Length: 273
Image (cartoon, rainbow, N blue to C red; front, top):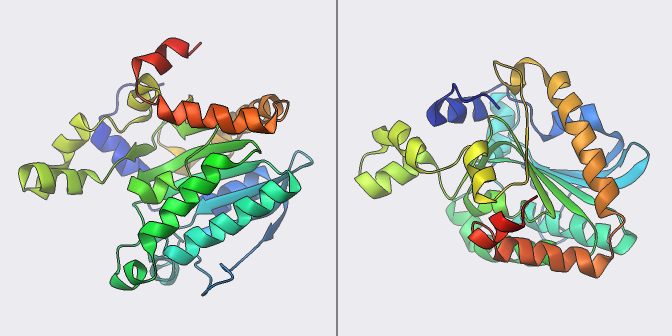
């Protein structure tokens, strides 16, 4: 873990326009991916990408945020900010994974849930809360990977994992540094200063017990060498899946519940190996 970057610099890397997203990790780490669309209630939200895939021959369900690459995709996916339909699609995939006994792997990269009036009218808060409730109770292994920007409940909805991994230059926080500075100091231009006090870097969150392991990145960031990132991530996913799949389903759910109840406390830090 390199300590020569400031938190603000890590935020910039996490938001880099070329940073690999869920689709890139699916292409690099999985085979036979079959995308599933729609929430069976209203419509499909492309800002959540999910489906069934094989990970070294093991069937898994993969779900993640999608920001897109082009301007058209950014607009279509609300820059990676899901609407209620996206979270309900995630719920459908989680319940399907539970039914067929497939582990769930999630990739987190979002500024937060879409804050538009229409999203609120269609039940944004309820959709996030229900996603949290469903993922908390799953009796299949859940591994979450924070790959870029993890913002607020929009990120946490996909982050209730038995193991939570984080790329070295990813960030994970209750809100954006700009929002933090605007609320606390009434000055969003002080966002760099906010980055220093928010404890949003991978090193900070490992110390607090919010995440379990840091995945190293190339010197200039994940966008410069996706293969190197995947070479580091692949064996960790393999190791954790092998270990989790040996556990009883009810034990998995109970351990996940306990993990999040104790998160950030001295009790959890004492239990860490």
